[in-house]
Image 1 (cartoon, rainbow, N blue to C red):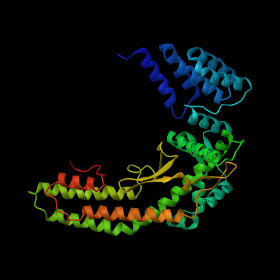
Image 2: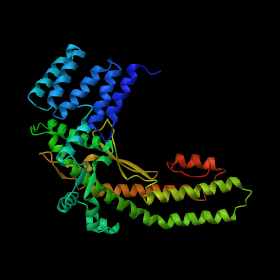
Image 3: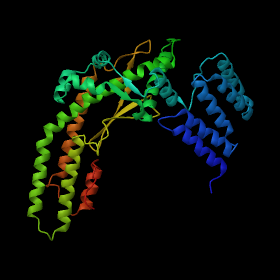
Image 4: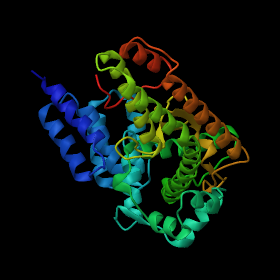
Length: 376
């Protein structure tokens, strides 16, 4: 049986994890958690106070900061008193854990007339495409998309469809840039969340441009390799026809190889059922921030965010790439080509195996574990 304290904590966790966030639901979860058990009140009051303060609901913030003080040791009182004074003066606080992502979401919606849909005008999109330094005409031509079609598709963004992780990733870019300034001895008194909110639409468009650039590069590699994939499938089909029905292990093995190649080819066609997007932001807490290009089972490479997002000394996005960008793409392309070679070498018939399990071990050891829908 779950204890009252644990049941209360589970509601607190639900409040923190709710995404996209809804203010009323978050408060409801926290209030119900308080009703179940008083043993988590120090957290509940702190979380409520921080959220109200971050949303500039200063009267409610003062109420919960005062309740929080009654639950805590004296050593926490100086900071809490400082927060109360700031609320009385209607000033913001810097530390808004655990609501950084939620507050960015709420503030972006507020700046967008409480709408979840960001609308970009054509000039804004063209300007973003310029600062990415991507050869857009070459990229769009390879994808058989006109500039007008790209602009039409990029005209809007639904922030409710953004994963929570994306918001955290953007926040960490911002925080690290601020720390860099401090380490360099540059004081920037104008740092506010408004600067970040203003830049989020830019960052989202930049990521869309970078993604389109990488997609065309990956497609270029796969188109070049298409004949090799097809030849391997034809070879296996011929071997299946020639194999005696009594050789069941052999048949299983050949079918497994055939399906593995088909699945591999599905990844390269970016089919939705197998592929959710090549730029999948992930965080590694020992580093400021990374983006991981995730195209499994072929490639998964971490890249430092500086390749993509650069802020100027006014904390405004002014560029996304430096002169090393083409070198980066060249390295990725080479890595992808090498992985395709390795994969096809694994499938080659000259690699003889006694049974399907032996082959599975070999292919997994080689780093290719994409075996969905294969026969058991």
